[in-house]
Length: 210
Image 1 (cartoon, helix red, strand yellow):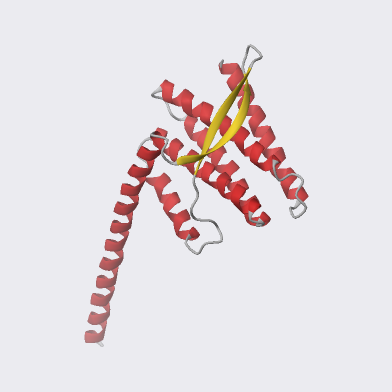
Image 2 (cartoon, one colour):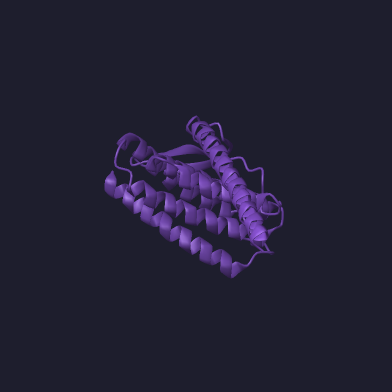
């Protein structure tokens, strides 16, 4: 019995060591990919899909804004989607600077709304709604995180404008499916009401700052 117990202990230690090694390797790879992603995002190399917005200036004139959404390669219908979500969670956790965390959460929010757009076009309305809801939730979280950023006022104003415009882009994308026959009208209206209220608060906030 003592011999068997010793073998079990050694086996447990070995398995624990292997799992620890795998965890360290996963974190190292995730951190490296995070740094690359943040760099590419800062250089605007991840955003390939333009969405046009009409933005009214203080003097009454209208300016055409091109907001770019990131490309999406993995959708909820893919078996790899859960792995991607785990990676995204760790990306946020591993951000060292609050400013970088805002950038990462906003990027993930934009990816979710891009997912939603593709899923609506592919006739997956329920999955599309889930992605849209997650996009709005992440967008709100990005705005909350930005409040905690104290340094670099120029970058903070830039991110604040990007978050504000993102909300308008989300609304435009969701309005494109308003008349679809295969969507849950009640769920759609709840999402739109939530987004409209948040967008209005962001607009009031910007007007008070300016």
